[in-house]
Length: 622
Image (tube, one colour):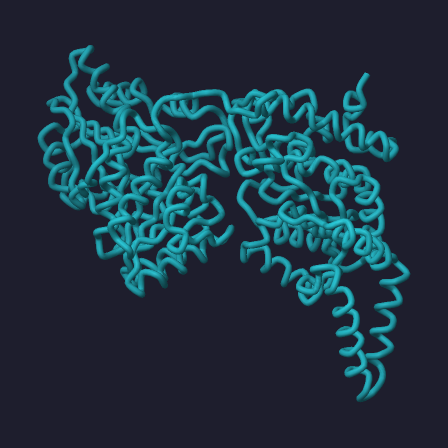
């Protein structure tokens, strides 16, 4: 029987010796590598947090003690150790375990996460909630160094330091290494500075000095400078201590003994504490250690070689976008690209290589990305902000106030719009049409395919005002055009098929489903007009209203929430034009959060498919 087979809850970890926990870490790594190679998922971040997770659950008492995993894509090990080992084969599969923490899935998942940098604020709120209720238990936020680039993380740190009450923040730093010499001395300072006696003496000395009239304050400042100067030579903790946190570390995040010792000590502290843990992304699997970015989120792959399962076929839409932007930038020196820690994910790696001085990765700071782009545009540049739809939600005020109110020519390229699949509700980009289309001055468009995406990008860059292009996760439908990129005409739709029985009006990638639905209907004797709307705003009102007035039936199709989305925009337009006698149906995302599963399966279940669209059209004909 393996050690892992004996772990059914966190309490089982408390029975293990250090050596046994180290052996357990290797068993867990093998399991995670094996399963992610089949299901896909977040590999490098999980391999880097194995010992950290084991030590946390060995020392702390979940669920009484709350552990909040920032982003949550490193929580696979947490799930395995908290009673979900036998379900781990189902991770990210429809009906199976989520790839992120979910409160409805386990009492050990203290907070739903999926977007970055929320852990400290959530943990502080939970700690204060526990204090107010008189409930026992610690609260621990585990946050990566990348997530610390977000302003939200520093807002949480600032408030926690101001309150001065107990909170434990673990900074999982996987982008730094500790050299042997510094590591040895740092380890000594770490042991000294985490001792309860040291910290009690430090606090008592502070109280004594503060009590000395006139000279006490200056003596205290001198003592702080001396301590900070000494500690600052060896540990990067001065920033956190200025924010009101006790800084502990750096600690080797792959030494279980050091982690356990540290966590036992800081558990006794009664004030805000930040534990700096150094880990290596992809630890224990050579391909992931060599290329952690590639193995951050990966599809099925061959364990022996680390190579992804060959899929072949056309390029991803993100690559089509990135290549088109690079080509256009070669012709226009004003074009710059901005991303928020998603260079490869948004297809901007080719742009970054071609134009390094015109490329900006601002870190996990989407609001800053929007306002930074506004500043660039105000000085005559043509910035393109490439971001996943779900992450742009964080920038709403900046888009409205800093970009659109000033009518600045910023282009927002929204990748992963619509259903994204296995990452689930935190990552589905199904709200952008609803939160963008009501903003004045903003042009909002959705291409039906890769070549229309290229043409829309050109039109957006030519336009002297703000615009947004949304496109889904997935591949191009066919060969990508080359040569000169001609812009689409702003605000003009196109009719793909004529028919006198019903109008199928779609935007974005689901246009292909509308065309297929028209084929199904023709087989049943029903002729449908298919309109590729292209523009959600400004809508081609003359064309759409004209067809609806003549035919009297319309089905709108979108990969967005129907509330406030494209269908709502069409309905509002028909009301403005006093067209009240038409029958209408809306196909889109219903008023609920959509769980994880394959993209095609989820769309089929939601009726956003050829069969679903045809069914809605038939219903209007009754």
